[in-house]
Length: 116
Picture 1 (tube, rainbow, N blue to C red):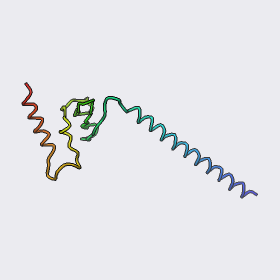
Picture 2: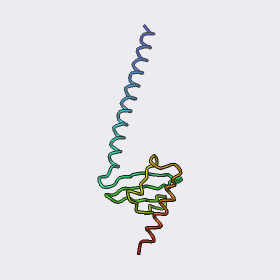
Picture 3: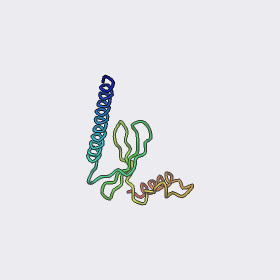
Picture 4: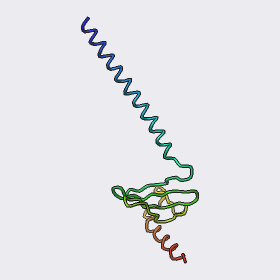
């Protein structure tokens, strides 16, 4: 009888452990979804992010029809450029040997020369 009681106590403990682990998993998934929704915006959308270093990255943000290239660091957020849809070239669609960074800089230099 002593062995059966030990086995039953172990099974009971395992059942309680798995029940608590399962509930914790479900709860964390639900909270994660809610936290994700809290970050959504009706008017802005993050298009892409490129990490440069620790706490430093470039962020492309679409606000309505405007596309902004932002530099983000510990010192603050800086507007680097306003982009257009034709400036947004997806990496998969690039042609081999096509250097889009240089092309983007050339376009920005042309736009800067056009400004009064």
